[in-house]
Image (cartoon, rainbow, N blue to C red; front, side, top):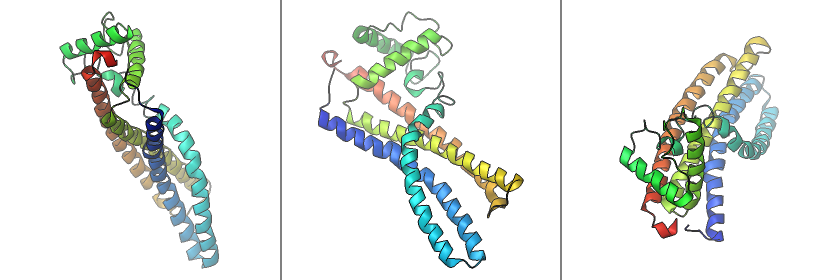
Length: 244
C-alpha cells in the first residue's frame, strides 16, 4: 500500500477541515444571520432606536462567531443523517453504487475486474454474492467494507483528495441548509401561532426557497460523490499490484 507521510496527512486534514467543514458552516450561517439582522433592524429602525440597533448588530456578530464553531463540530454528524442516511441510502451511496449490477457507469466486465482485484488484495469475495443489488444486505455490508479499505489504499492520489474535498463541501452544505430551512419554518410557526415577528409574512416563502435550494445542493452533492467514487475505483485499478 502506498503511504503518505505524516506532514502531508496533517496538511490534507487541515485543508479538508477548511474546505469541507468550515466553508459550508460559513455559508449556512449567512441565512439565519441575514434574516436575524433584517428582522431586528426593521423592528428597531421603525421605533427610532438607533443606539439599540447598533448594539444589536454588534451582538449578532459575537453570537454568529460562537454558532460557527458549534456548527463546525456538529455539521459532519448532521450530514451522516442527511443526506447520507436519508438520500444516500444503500442503492445511492456513491462509493458503493458503482458495484451494483444495475449501475451503468462501469461495464459488467469492468465490475468483475474490480471485484477480482479487491478479492486478490483484501480477500473480500464480492463475486460469490447473488444478487449483486442493494436488496442483498450481505452484499451491501461487504461492499461497505471494501469501499472503506479502498479509501485507505487510494488516499495518496492528489486529484482524488481534491474531489473528496468538493464532495465533503457539498454534502455538509446540504445538511447545513436543511437545518436553515427547519429554523425558518420554526420561526414561521412562531409568527403564526405565538408571536408576530418582523418580516413574519415572508418567512414561509423564505423557508420554501431554502428548502428548494437544499434539494438542488443535494443533487450537486450526489453528482460530486459519484465523480469522487469513480476516480477512487479508477485509481485503484491503475495501481501497480505491488503498491496495493
